[in-house]
Amino acid sequence: MSLPELLKEFDAVASECRLLLENEIRHHRTEGGDPDEAVLERKRELISRLDSLLGQLKEAGSRLEESPAASRDDLNHLQQKLMQVLRLDRELEKLLLASHVRRGPAKSDGGNAADSASPGGHVASRLYGKRSEKR
Image (cartoon, rainbow, N blue to C red):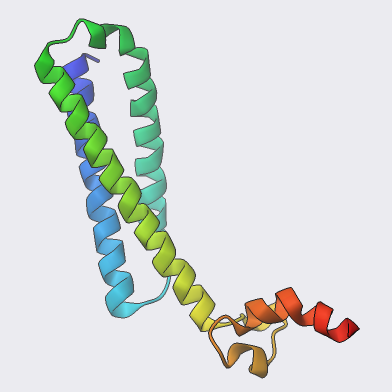
């Protein structure tokens, strides 16, 4: 695959990743809950494709030195786009973590009602419960 084709495909996959993450964040904020399996599977596919394209870009490193300035500008643009994807992924991760902490323990977690009365109570109970029992 030529360098311009590689850059164009990377741009398309990164754009799709960004759109998927933005939709997932929007869905989580409006409806809550975890993403469905189809979304997770699509993310796995896109991540695998991005990883493959990054490997191909690394292999094309020698060709980059011979590329015109326009290709360098394209690379900078793609780097910024990838950073957007990483920031969105981090934002989504924070949202999901916060919602799991607020929800409290699952029934199979062995937590009791007092632990789940406050956000993160089950976490504190697990961390400090054994210590307070020894006193």
